[in-house]
Length: 337
Ligand SMILES: Nc1ncnc2c1ncn2[C@@H]1O[C@H](COP(=O)(O)OP(=O)(O)OP(=O)(O)O)[C@@H](O)[C@H]1O
Ligand SMILES: [Mg+2]
Image (cartoon, rainbow, N blue to C red; front, side):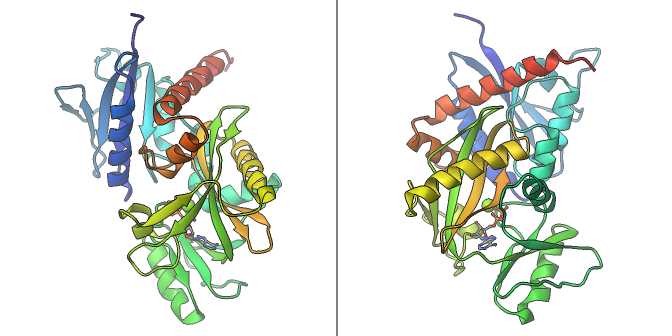
């Protein structure tokens, strides 16, 4: 048997999406073929502590950068890292930076693409500059009044978070300040966004420089909180949503979603994977809402289901992502600095 690839799955983390990340990370671990991979886990606590587990779990407080002593249980000694972390301190380029310093291949977007796509304000600036149509919004910073030019309803969101945490649908001006205050608990930068009336469609993208789009899927949210949008309950409570593949929109809109999803991936310089969230507005226009560089990653998560429906099953998706990580690292290691 050829040498197994040593893989470390990073999960948990300091963000409010900690639990979701643990669920995704455990699914990844369970799906990695033991004939091909020797897997270890690294659980990052809510407090930021890194716990290395390789059968007998041992706790470390050191950062996983190369050390002269070369403790075998550091991330720098594995062949590839799978950061399955959502939100700040994981999906935002911070962990990716650490992995760059450690010179270890890792799955998914690099530092810049992670940071840009974590920040809905910067993400839109890049997309718009590169000709990708997005939802309209204004950004308000600390001390700014909550003003906007849109008709109600509007969406209010923290710039850098996910899983619908801190997001409100605001139906009239009287609800605005409370929604902004809620979003500000999570970020000092907040977006007020024009409501898009239409169908919510998500698309998976996979690849490095020539990425492919999955079949898109329509999100039908019916969570248990009473919200009429894709809120936390519809995302994570059992039976809170249905994914309809392909979406119930005209064929041209389906191809447009795929085209714009790849464009958005390339425009923001993603690598490996991303789930691109779009709207097909009443009237047919397709807008990109946001990109997620580390989407939910259980076999029943949208990203995996979309690729499954497109002929790439979960375990193969992981194989391909690992190959892409190794390909990028190899390519970049030939650069002169
Ligand atoms: N401009 C909008 N018009 C209509 N609905 C919207 C708009 N913005 C957000 N929504 C609704 O709110 C949900 C969450 O918004 P968004 O995807 O921006 O947040 P997120 O927390 O980053 O999500 P994710 O979990 O995908 O990272 C969307 O899936 C959609 O249902
Ligand atoms: Mg989203």
